[in-house]
Image 1 (cartoon, rainbow, N blue to C red):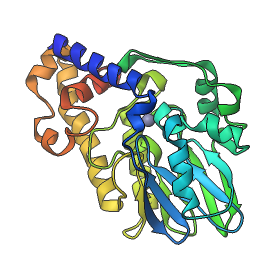
Image 2: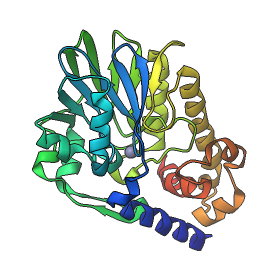
Image 3: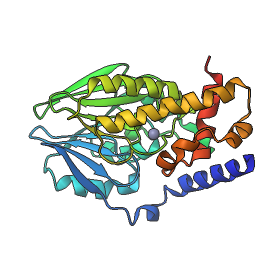
Length: 300
Ligand SMILES: [Zn+2]
């Protein structure tokens, strides 16, 4: 089983290292989904982008991969002729920040949580994928960082970025469009499949559960939820995702308490009942188990 996981890891790692190549993105189209008046979700490759338009200029959430920037800009130009004023990164991962350098060169003001600034400036090792990510050039870094929350007032919107500690990473922000009942969760929410949780960057499945539980108290049945990955969602989708995470911890904890190794635990197939619904995304079931197992084993 370890060998299978190692092969899986190297496959995923090969995918990620080639994913920077330009031709990887040749066939990608950017799809624009209207979420609310003036608010859009853009799908392409990588994390979902949020866009808020209006007379004061464009507010942008995340920017996928660098080679996609021209297509993303073309998609944005179809919904607004105003310049992009602000870009906020929901966390540091390269499928959400890859366009930063291009946008920084366009004089867009980039913002993020303090830990996003720290991780982008220093370069990172993503241990789950054995992937070294180099430090970003200065122009790609946030010029403003915050430690808890910040609110933007433009286009008659009040957009609050609020930090949630130790969830998907240690630098996650969720964006609340306060007077529109829309939120962008970043990678605290993968709609419909097992999430990647980056424990090497301070993430934890327990933080994911806490963050989604908090969010569930803040949304209602009409809230439009832009997830980090997957289709536009509603409260029920978020509830289902939260409940899945709780179930994962409930199923895996007894195995860690017995002191089973990952290999032994994998043989017990603790996520069997969940895999059909959640195991067909980026992370296949054994890979997901391998990513969360140590965090659960270490949890007292
Ligand atoms: Zn991520």
